[in-house]
Image (cartoon, rainbow, N blue to C red; front, side, top):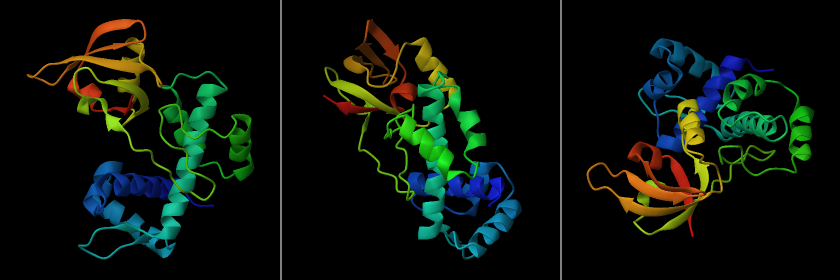
Length: 218
């Protein structure tokens, strides 16, 4: 059984690889809020496991084995989030911290049972894809709401960087996944948007928010 710390490093590297393409030790230490020497020491251990390729002064790279292992950790995390939300009734803003603990449970049967009970969901409560049993992640191509023009209509499919503060804000605005938006106006000064959705009309959303709402234009 691998340590929780190793798995946390591996998952952080998967996020960085998908977000930045190429990343280095400094990016990793910043992501995990640890010192460079601490990160360097752990990366060497991950390299010994065959999860990472590391050469001094060069970008870090997940191996195929490392990417699969990271995908399986993420699968457990996102299945747990969905189970907590769909079956146990937790709010989408509440599930992350609990899933951070449960993703390290070493029981394939537990997570397969969760998956089956829920009917094999494709995404978590925030619209992020749940990796398959081989650790593969099937990403959908969405636009940011901020990229749409006045008059456009779109369905909210996912939340990018779904922090608790953002999710609480969306709750306050009665915004949820699969909701349809109509862009009424875009302010030139700050790129904030006036939108209609559900029973809400003429709601102003900042560019900070619309940059993180991932939509499918309809």
